[in-house]
Length: 211
Image (cartoon, rainbow, N blue to C red; front, side):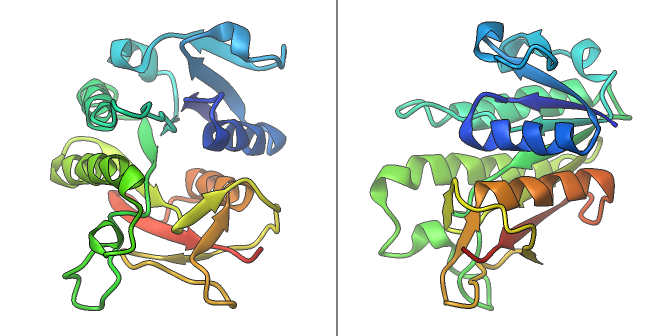
């Protein structure tokens, strides 16, 4: 499949790109600075996410949005999401996969409290969580594109590629030791699995893994 990865030099994006390449997909890194892509075998589209058009995207089967907004500019998660939604309206054969956040997951069965609304949620990540949550809302309200929003667990960091993970829908998951954790490596597996065999079209899902 032909896959474009926005933010391919970031922590999550680089692992998703590697996972997709290792599985034999035709992968293009969509980045602002081509010089940051050191693998000469990786195709590169040097363009800012905010300047992407339907013409840029329509040749891809899937676009992965792994854009990371810098601190203090968390609203750019929403802005970037809206640019992609608009562009993909005229690229109907291109699916969007969004690297989302855990903050919008629910912690109670009644869906009254999200992770970012709990007292212990770190304040320094609140703006990111809120804006990623708004990006999800925009996707849920769109009706002319094909998308999937993948929320990691609360602890989302580089780690071991165990090759195994469990999925859920809108609620925070925990692993066998009670931790809401997923390595970026196992998350990347989940992303490429969803690309290869879509099971959550126009939905959000979440993943958890062991350490």
